[in-house]
Amino acid sequence: MKNIVFDIGNVLLDFHPQEFLKGLGFEKNIEDRLYKLIFLSDEWKELDRGSIDYEVAEKIFKTKAPDLKKEISIVLDKWHEMLIPIEANVNLLKSLKDYGYNIYYLSNFQKDVYEKMYNKHDFLRIGNGGVISYQVNTLKPDHFIYAILLSKYNLNPSETLFIDDNFDNIEEAKKIGFHSVLFTNCDELKNSIKPLL
Image 1 (tube, helix red, strand yellow):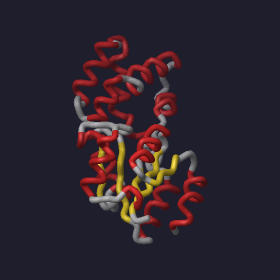
Image 2: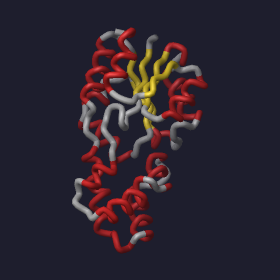
Image 3: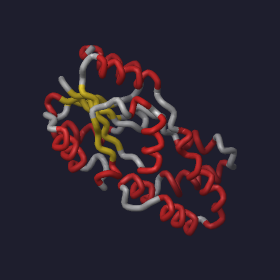
Image 4: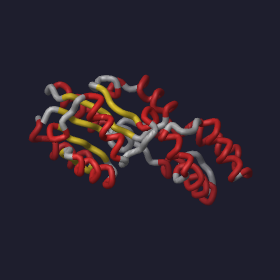
C-alpha cells in the first residue's frame, strides 16, 4: 500500500446539517423545510458539481420558498460553520503522512466553502493532491471522478486505500480496484488502518 485517499465531508470534517439547523433556533417545521429545500435539493448537488454558483442557487431556493427568504440567507451564510475537524481522523491522516504514505483527497464539495476550508485547515494542504467534484464537474460515485484521480497522479488502485462514509462511493471504488474502508466511527477506522502503521 502506497496511497491513502480520504473523503472530506464526515470523514475529516463534520457535516450534519440537521444538527446545524437545530442550532439556529428555527421552529421545527422551518428546520424540516430548510433541510429538504437546501440540503436535499438538486441544486445542492449542482453546487458540488460546480455547474451553478451560490447566487444562482440562492435565487432558486428563494423562488421555491419566498416566505423563507431571510432563513435561506442565514443558512447559506453560516452552513460552513458546521464543518468542524474530526480530530481523531485528522491525527490519523497526519500519522499516515509521517509514515511515508502518499495522501490524497477525493470529495464532493462546493467551490467557495472548499476554498475557505482549504485555507483554514492545514491538514487539507499537507496531502500530495486530490480531486474535488466542482473542479471536474462530476460527483462520486461517478466512475469518471475516480479515473481522474488515478490518471492525474498516476496511481495504481491496487496500491491505494480509499476511505469514505458513503456505501455507494466505496462500492464504486472497489469495482475499480481500490482497497476501501467504509467509515462508520473513528475507533473502527483506526483499527482498520493499524496494519499500515
